[in-house]
Image 1 (tube, rainbow, N blue to C red):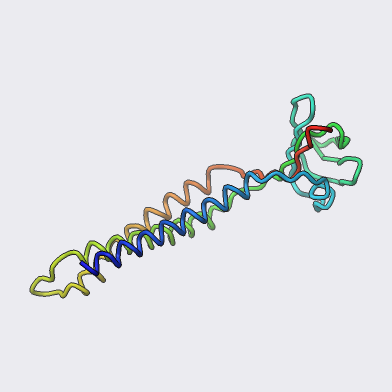
Image 2 (cartoon, helix red, strand yellow):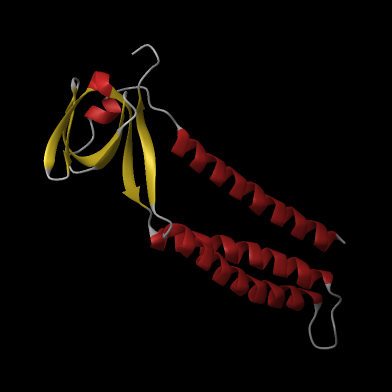
Length: 174
């Protein structure tokens, strides 16, 4: 009984940590920067997605940005956009397939190992293996299965396109 409680606490701790990681990731993705300096300090060559006051969107490679606006290369043409015309600016970047796959593998392996250890520890020892050995075997088997499943999910998530990080949102008064 004590072994099951320890395993449950471990699983709950892992799930709590995952929730915190996901929460900080989502919060970072949706944070709104209301300062133009995040735009004017960007290095040339980054891909920006700029929403304009008229509702249109311009996506291009940053050539230059200063306090008055920015210059993008869009379809082989330079496009000057004044700061007063801009509603929001986001940095577009590709998701890393390798990073997503490794994170998925680690999370899946950890969750699988915890579940396998809990399952193995709950089994009464048989003639060949003790309870601890059964827990270790369960952790290894379920950990491997979880790692494979997690890497597949991570791979699919990493291939799902581009990520945009909002770096500027015009204030309502502008």
